[in-house]
Image 1: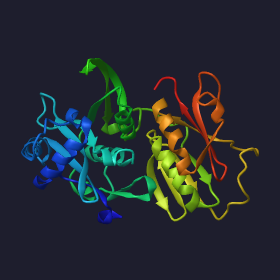
Image 2: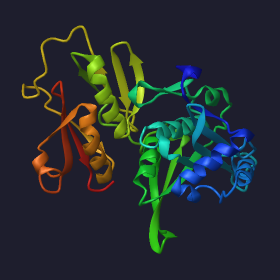
Image 3: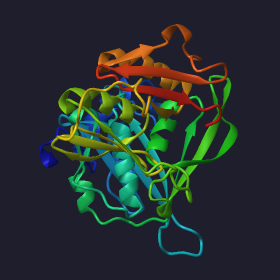
Image 4: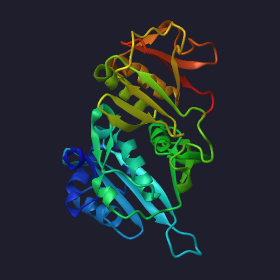
Length: 335
């Protein structure tokens, strides 16, 4: 969709101060991401000090329908014996209106890919067939950093899911890093190298190259698959007239296609593949998918035995769509 998209990444501008003030007042947890903003003048000062284009940082506003709705930031760092920036600290935030749509994680992924010199297309697919306009980002020269770092609180699984989607690997935990309302909270430290190429774990190779699913009606099947696969962290890949691919962090991918060579209907009880089992990042993420699955064309199987229909010690959600494809979403014991 290019520049016609109503969702885009763009640099911050001095005219964004009133909108920043509005978002700050409406977003309860934004005080942990930005300095105190009590007035529009405070917002203008914050823009000048932290968000406007400047040497040593890259700041990208997420714009939705012409209004700022989020931000992806990279603060550049260098070693003492170097005159060149080679590392970056990544942070991100979003307004309440943007959350739960898959936009922030797609924007973070795009910015991180660009910062590490991997290149970014002019637009990136979003859940529901929308596009994130990344044309301005793609047109900028990449700083070509060697390493990116970020951190998130262990009680903030949404932020952790964004980090995983953007290709970061957990490298450690800072115990009791924060004290919030009297509660000590651990923080996760994660990193991504330019040589990782966005893989979840550097130096590993996926056991599965790709899976190809044939559907009898792509237009009817696509919305449900797109929602589910992006919800568990796969990103939109290639798209063609009667097909689509979604890519996992380890480089493996899933294809959904309506092929003219398709014969007969699907019956998962016939000899062949019975169901597709995929990883889910956490139990809260599984619960969220369970609550929303029905609205996206998925019906729960074995609901009376949830979440241990596969046996004690095995936490999973079983879903089936209108065409008869069964998907098992599994939460690993240790992530």
